[in-house]
Every structure is written in C-alpha cells, then in structure tokens.
Length: 163
Ligand code: DQA
Image (cartoon, rainbow, N blue to C red; front, side, top):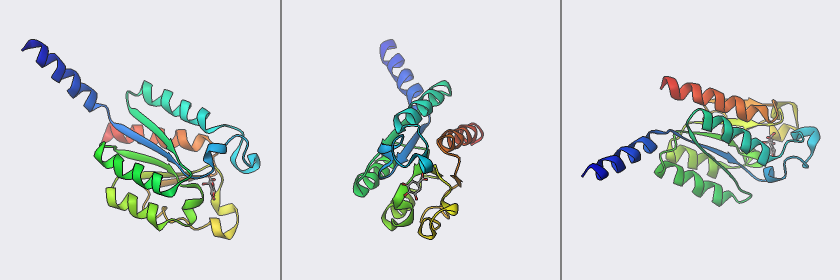
C-alpha cells in the first residue's frame, strides 16, 4: 500500500515537469559547416546541448528533433500534443517559406511556438522574407545566430513560471 503511494507520488512529480520541444527543419543538421557566413560555426549538437543544460537547471523536460523530411516533422508535431508539450521552439528552415502543411500541423495541435532563425531572413533574398509561421507564432527571433534558440528558451521558461 505504502509502496503504491510512493510510486504514484513519483509519477505525479515527473508529470509535473513541463515539456518543451525544439524542432529544426531541413539542412540544419549541417550547421557549423553550412554557409557559416549566414548560419555561423556552431553545430546543431552544440545548440541542443546548451538548450538541454539550461532546461535541466530549470527542471524542464526539453527534447530536440531535426528532420530533412517534412512528413517526419509533421508527425513529431502531432506526437507533441499526445505528450503534453507546452511550447515549441521552431526553426522551420527552408519550410519557413514553403510549408502550409507544417503550418497546418501546428494549428491542428494548437501548441504555441516561438519561431527562430539564425540569419535575419528580412535582410536576405525576397523569397526568404515571407514566413508561413510568423503570424501564428508567439514571437519571432531572426538574425541573432545560435543565441536566438537560448533567448527563445529563456522567454519560455519565464512564461512557464507566470502561466
Ligand atoms: C533559416 C533561414 C531559411 O531561409 C533557410 O532556408 C534556413 C535557415 C535560418 O535559420 O536563418 O535553412 O531558417
């Protein structure tokens, strides 16, 4: 009886940790070597590690997922609803400018998100200056390099405390 109570308590405590999800679109697995004049020299692994460490000190569950396949990203977004993810940090990469499907997936699950871009998409080619996500995002960080992800996380940690 007592044992069962302890298990329940532990389970409840773990479930209380808020969940955040970081999503990265195509070619971002090549960060570090890919067009460093636009995207810097920090790798996605480094960014994910920094995010994980910050989330851990804040006692928040954070998972990072990158895909070069649109359907895989969409399915990850669908799963996020089932998992009770509270907020998403999203760099849709090239899908920013093309994907009604990823936009619709976010609308379908209704999970609020912050849109992040390493480069300033408004200072680049005209086709990059439209985003299918910005009007649905809580906010957009563009042009602050890898720090944009950490700033988005800091914002969301603060938001979780005040929700
Ligand atoms: C990007 C900007 C996009 O235009 C581009 O296709 C990317 C990365 C950025 O982080 O600056 O892949 O989202």
